[in-house]
Image (cartoon, rainbow, N blue to C red; front, top):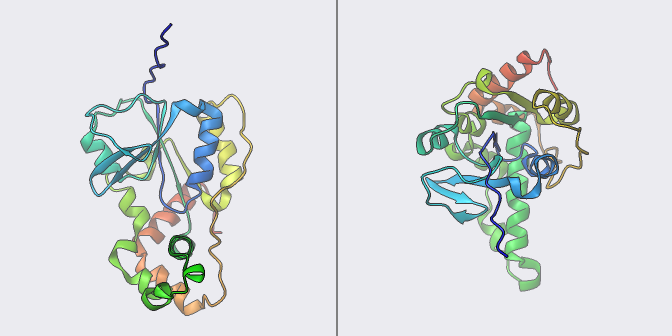
Length: 227
């Protein structure tokens, strides 16, 4: 006997900006909607990926939830989005997000290179400082870049990573989830490290002026002064 795979119509887009608790949130989405109903849907340098494999269809995949890294403009241009599809995302204080991203990449490089066991020090020779990393245009205002093509008021919900548990409860109500899922954050890279001076903090804030404004706007929507 053959069983046909259940067909889903996309009903939710979860735009995952790096280092905004997206990995934890993806596990929560699977708990709510079901393991097979949630897919990783990324667009990297114009290449569409479905669960890390190249996806060449012109139609959205069969899934209830599309969760991944993509600029909103790109998914809107490449695919015919259902008019009633819901849209959510999470934002994080821009400076903390940049610092977290930097140390995450540093950690990943150490793991991949495995320098201690191999007796080499390539990473030490080639690694950029936090300040150098932050100055790279590719690493500046990334939250604003991901949200290119859509304003905050067009989202059904915008969560704040620093307010994760509270906002998750609010989101669950707005999206009519049958229950509030358990929150166990995964893949967390601390943003507070020794050696982060006030000068570096301010420098990163100035390099991410657009993101600082975006974050402030999101807090204002929620009537939150600051974190």
